[in-house]
Image (cartoon, rainbow over all chains, first blue to last red; front, side, top):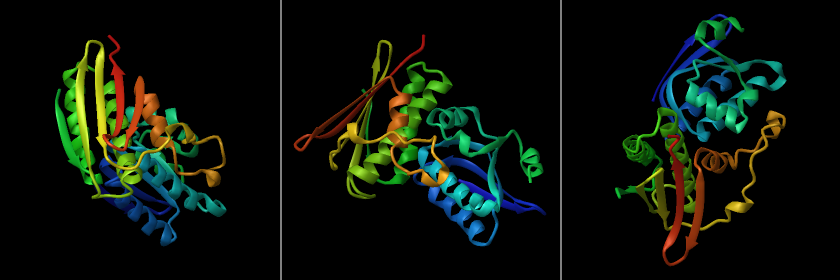
Length: 111
Length: 137
């Protein structure tokens, strides 16, 4: 899995490529934790290049969302969510916790 | 009846998913159905490592894929701790995010991705999880 990040004026974009499962999710967790620990709470997570995500990955995103939304200081939004991943997200019922955009431009504009 | 043994490490998940991907693909499932199988098996194996074995490196997972007339049967075996699946609560995602508890989503996904899910626990023969995915012909 590859993770890269870009800082913008009003938010940060984190791009993840690969598969997010119990083996790789801790790496994403570490990256997102390093951002929130440094006061970055407006995050666009681009997962267009992610073609597999298990519930472990979703829990990492939920925990990050909790930190971002605390005190109304920010939000974690998702972009480029592949249909198969969105289907499982909807099935479990977690989709209500995230704002999802088709692309990064729209996600950045949200902030 | 392809069978493979995998070390009980999270690093094995990619290989396990590939193994069932190949079986599901050969069985004629659609891309969506294959993903459902991969996800169910991944969740099951993650649970085996984390809960049955109590962590990585404590045992193996055996995976067998059997072609059925109308689908695919996948059997996972381990020698970890047994559990009672009937008492694992389905997570409630209607609550405020702060009240969410990170347990139970995996089993929920397994039961919804597959058409038949059956657990057997035996101190002598180990634990067996049998899952069946029917093909939408």
